[in-house]
Length: 504
Image (cartoon, rainbow, N blue to C red; front, side, top):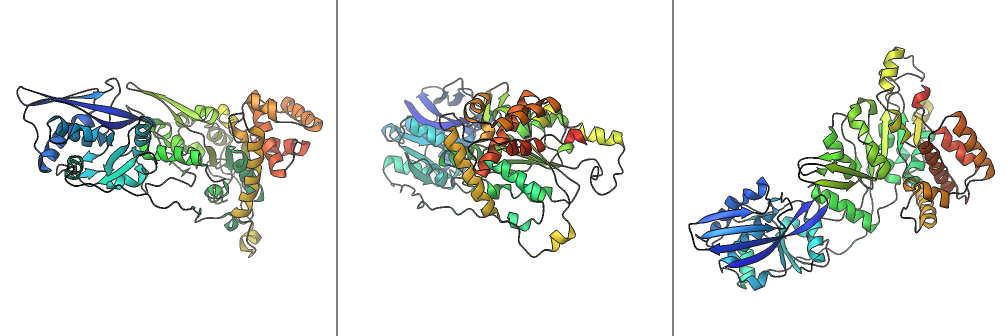
């Protein structure tokens, strides 16, 4: 007897509905699984056999052939266990095939028949809903995540026996219910009011948050670079519904979505400098998301930037420029979104004091080798460079609180609203995402600003990329000031934040 049941798998960030086709025929007992199954799926044969028997059902002692369609798609998830088991029960007549027609079955089976959660539920159920399926059976631990798709009836089940009883009508399961929607009040354990002094660094981070620009902070040890970086999420605008859904899908596929709720706070990722290229941009035989993708719509903080291997840093060029990272492997070539704000911090030299108050103990060669770990093309993609001085004793001891994150965020939100109005219809929503065409069409410079930019272009020998990035930063500064046109002082401030590494 033939039966077709629907499961799902993920490839990249996209869910794919898998048709699990089973056929029982006369012959010696066997279990053949075809359809480009990975090891985790091939091992399902033994898990499913034991789970069916331990759930009080009969495993058919006949020739069993299972096909996972489409056959050209690599299946690498244990989430097909439940659909395999139900397909076997349906083809052997233990559950009616008609009851499974519009259902999606997702979950890993234990040997006793209990259902375990799997990663990537959200993109799977979204794809299932788009293909007209009406119900989904998942582990109870995955039910909250599955409910993020409003177009499916979700059943959170504990074991295979309950699924079989529901399909036969012996025991009707109750559909899972989502929690009432609540307005999430973003709370952070840190605030800019705790940072004394550092007026220039705070100004640069405000510009970065307002326009989505990349930042490099250079300063001696203990000057507060890491402290400043950790507070950037507190001044970023809240994510839109589409951004939150996109980030939630990424974390679901990566197996990092533990709450089962829509992610509302922007990601903040801070990998250690020993990270590999695959860990940063993604990798594996079937590529998984790396740190640049996990920080999508958020912040990627790289502390002690020159300590990262140069080969690792160079792979940042494409995601910084395009907002996308392309990974080609034997089994798949995938593209992952990677539109993030890069915040990097570094010392000026190995001892950390070159160019600051304390005497530097490094030789010129050591300083040169240290700073040359960062290539010119990489530095050219970082819009804002700022020197972070150590705060004075008076600043540290003052009892007057610094400006709070909430006040800074209000200015950032006002600047973002101006950008969205100006860039409406251009396919981007903040200044850092503008291309050369958008700059030409939306950015207006005064005559004095154009003259200053022309002089800076010749004197500083700027590249075409630097020219565009200075205009983007100038536009953000103008947006923060509420100006309708880029003035000379806006360009002057933007130029002052250009690459300072080469001047050391």
